[in-house]
Length: 188
Image (cartoon, rainbow, N blue to C red; front, side):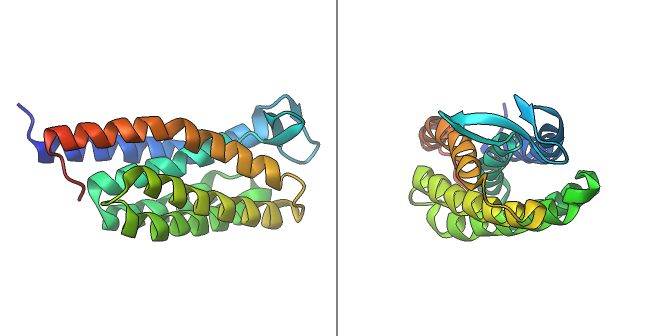
């Protein structure tokens, strides 16, 4: 039978791997998938009626939530290591014209997420995930659009697209919290 410590570690590694996968997937999506691809710009998807966003927003929103979950299972040190590794990975796989924007916006947004999530997560997990993701997605959206395109015309779409992924994850976060309490699994 698996101990709670083993379970925490296995789930943490799964969240870490999923978080890591979001980075290349976001970079790939932004250049390859959308209902319309702007010449020398991003591929766009609709995120609300009349509002489009670069397609990578979905994976960025998910990455913010997965980083929180990975931190809950593996701890703050692993979260900071994952942020650093993610920034390096982002720089390594982003299209050349987006390397700086992708790397800086990823690192800053994940650190903003970390700063908000860390003090709140033990008392109010769902609220911590929501508020930290909100801080991270706003930072990411502003920085990425400024550095990559010097154009904020997709800002609303960026925020909405990332927020969709966060909002879709909140019921699962609540279920995870209830399951953890039921089996006695404490965060690191």
